[in-house]
Amino acid sequence: MGAFRFFSAGESHGPGLTAYVEGLPAGLEISEAYIREDLARRQKGYGRGKRQQIETDFAKITSGVRHGVTIGGPISMFIENTDFSTGKGPDGVLWTDEMSVEPSDVPYEKITKLRPGHADTPGIVKYAQDDARNILERSSARESAARVAAGALARTFLNQLGIQVFSHVSALGSVNSEADINRIDWPSVESSQLRCADPEAESKMIKEIDSAREEGDSLGGVFEVIGYNLPIGLGSHTQWDKKLSSRLAASVMSINAVKGVEFGAGFEQAKMRGSAVHDVIIPIEEWDTGEELEFPKPWPRRSNNSGGLEGGMTTGEPLIVRAMVKPIATIMNALETVDLNTGEKVEKAHYERSDITFVPTCAVIGEAMVMMVVADAILEKFGGDHIKETKKNLTTYLKSAGPRG
Image (cartoon, rainbow, N blue to C red; front, side):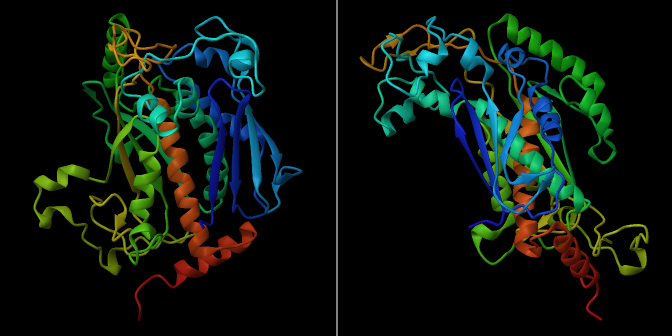
């Protein structure tokens, strides 16, 4: 049982999404307006579809917060799907009928033209369904709104401890950003249409998106999540499932369309020799004690090829998580497929409105997943039923984290 736990419920075109979070200490200032800021970031991005013009995601807090402050109990939130009450499905049936909880007499069209690249085919087999909508509604990336809302709660907690987490798009389609991750201007990333820190690369990315749109196709890419001021020693080397690297990889891999995760220098390390890979520890006479720092950093490194992780634990250097997002499986120029009922060939798979790319959105979701895992590791290590207790425990720990003498 984790110290910080998150669950979600809801379907893409149902009444809405529910996010449930437990484990956060009391004493954290939380507002629905603050959560809305992260939800708005998730909806941005050049190449997004019409769904983002319909929804204005807002998480209504229904428990765990009183007078703007957490009280230590579970926090639940509800995010309404505006499309449910106002829109229609591709067959022209109102979503209120199509997704009705109670039996409905309104005829609707079952989805039997299976979509390659989606959860449709394995899902209908696993759950013995005859309508792919029963799979696609829950497997939709719409669920990620609940993750981002929960991630905003984790961000509030981590910020109290001096930990900050950001993200940017480092590649989209065939275009790579040349931005130096050690010198990223994060406010400019927030104002970018594609969360890209390299304006020249961003212009090329936009052209590639336009080209894919004209051809009825989709694009993937790569995003990076970077965390600053994580204390040394989060996670553990003692069991495979306690390694922070394992937990982070699993959480980021759970994001729709993510097909690969790496840390720091990642797969490039396979081409390097050990002497060039491993991060040399700086001797104490060169440490920046930083009297102005609330939480001094011990055991700094000359490089960070490990991405801030060694032996499944944080080193104190910036955490660098990189993920590859495959092209969106729902494409306007739909692929050929087969019919669920007959198994026979169908010229085009089922299509519902979709994005051309959602790599910038995945970056924001990636932040949320990383923050929730880090929050869990912090609470696991330092505990605290009130935020003041957690901060006191962290401060005491860091004071003893230096040389043993």
